[in-house]
Image (cartoon, rainbow, N blue to C red):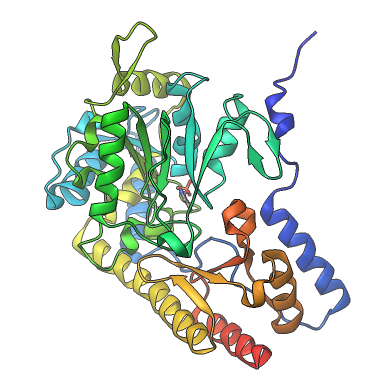
Length: 409
Ligand SMILES: *Cc1c(COP(=O)(O)O)cnc(C)c1O
């Protein structure tokens, strides 16, 4: 008898965005004429920039010739892209990495979900709360998260990120083995300072813990005193693995490309205390389970690092950040308590009058015909907040704000 992996059955069957879609569809069925605007889903809307499109065309034409055709590429990614990453994302910040520490991926979701394979099933994990659901769910699937009750997993340490602590978690008072951090943060849109991040690196070094650091939104940072990479902190290469994605940086949600840094210095222990380097383990894992990101996507990603590419990508990010700025200004003027939106495309808004996340979601849907994401969908500490995204088109975003203003008045 083939037995199922029962850990999958513990996962709540409802996916947040499916629940939202169901409620929006119910509204549309009773209000067929209403024009609903979504400030909910975290996908980009602006087309690929010209430098990327040209690179895609060029790479496609190359593949059409006998001489230029490429089959399987290196599992770790092509050196042309790995070198561009070292030269543009790290060297200017004084970070010297080896090319073999860079692993090109097909987007950060895969690797943030897969990385937990490198550590034993009985490690303890801690997550910022609210969080990107992949971190916990991927641990649930292999049985590391325990059982769920009232939206909390028994083997997960939840570190609340709230207005009270500036959305940066407190260092836990007990030892944890694995810590997931994401800055700039999805969903709260908030950032971490170098000083705060240093505390985490020091905690990890002292407690022999590992930090999985998700930097998917680093391109949105507008102030260079805020760390773009955890490796800006001394000692981080002994304790941190970092994930990057071109999805939000350059609209690659449909193209698929990103990268993961696994430093050669990072190790984990065996039960007998032997130190094992994780870089060769991850390399082995990738060579077995991953056949590389497409050549086309990697050429497209390389184009982001050309002078034109950099400028064009910056312009698109500027477009989203203008949305974020207008959203923040308007909502603040309307008396709302708004966080984030300065170095990230997300705004985290406290629901007025202590109403619950889902209650406010429905009120705004029915009152303003605007869709948001209920904060509680990202974890228990998200209750009493909603997330708005700045990824919309400018006209629609402004229209949505107008409606919210009319509704609130
Ligand atoms: C969007 C996102 C990612 C990246 O997703 P990919 O498209 O798979 O690269 C990673 N982490 C967070 C927190 C995100 O919001």
